[in-house]
Image 1 (cartoon, rainbow, N blue to C red):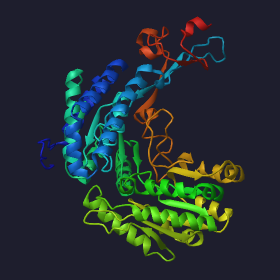
Image 2: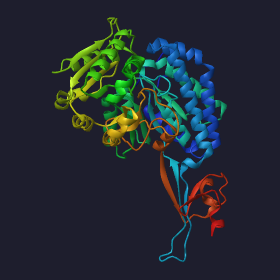
Image 3: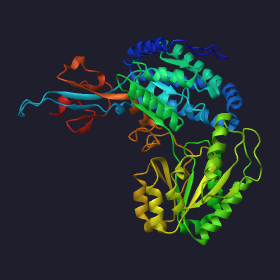
Image 4: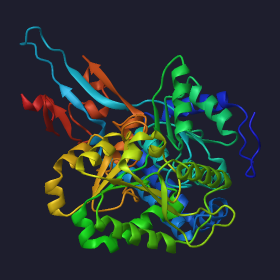
Length: 501
């Protein structure tokens, strides 16, 4: 049993929810892509209608400013429309056709393949993104685009906001004559409801953005199931940034301003927050650290999302600063009030960093640790000692890049996104984006949770062998009624395979 919410959206029977989700999936999975696309656009339109109310409610629940919330709503709307456009084009289903060859020994039968939706998806709302990674966020949008039904576990930190977005989805369901239970909304204890949802036999996949402990627990639940399901969890990343000397020499002041802003953006409550800065020992680096410290000094503490996150930040930061060899080199000039984060910059030598695993852990908030290396080999050792990351960044001139190609090559194994001369905060929603990385950044580095290709998490390949044309889905019929690109006998084409003999 789960507690009633202020919106009266209590859910007391997870089994009923999942049965309804399965029934909705059986109908929805067969709908044409243009109907699913229209539904996604309708959700976007319904969210836009209540933008003002959403901003007001989310501001009260999360302490995030109106400008940030408006931007996030716009991003949420745009990613819904991106998926609508993506599935309307159609080639994403990766249709492949290998026609029969009776002359071959042994003869080859007609074999055709495409991606199909996997089933009901469980989406866990994220505390730090009440819109873009929550009720109608990327996980929900991509799952609906794929043809899956969705059960959203709303985050308790912004339950009213989540309920309002769910209401908008319900309006879109009615507008587009979709199955009533295509999207359902569960509120209540995260541990109890989350476990029940993830372990239910009807669940086909899980999308999660949050802590390492939360993501690991969901993986454990999956492993305890009779039928294992994929858990796509984004969990932990310190997003290392390498500063080369020529870049620091030419623009240390502007880099200090850029990175002070990135470290403290949203009080550091971004999964791509630059938590570790790496550079070679030099007088240029000393000047940069002074400038960066001065910029951090100017940052005014702000309230964090909720008391739990603020408490965890203070504990993690305190523990980090208590480690041997860690020295504070900068902090906000203003002491924080209740629920406010204290922006902080510290430094440590590479030797100390390499000897202490604790220094490689994420501090979720406006904190960054400068690691000072004696030489290039030590810098590479620092990078090699890190676990999987969402991002890794290089600040360099052309000369730096030419002189340190081995460092760039090393970064390819470290993260899902490599950035040159930018900041890791800010994740563009587009087809080329990768928001994922080797464990523990995510549970499966083959996939992204942001961008059009995130749809691949909620589908599986299905092969049709020897089927008569009339029994094939439109995507695989000879006439190609959807006019999509298909791989026919190892060549991309829109032509009828029978016309290619």
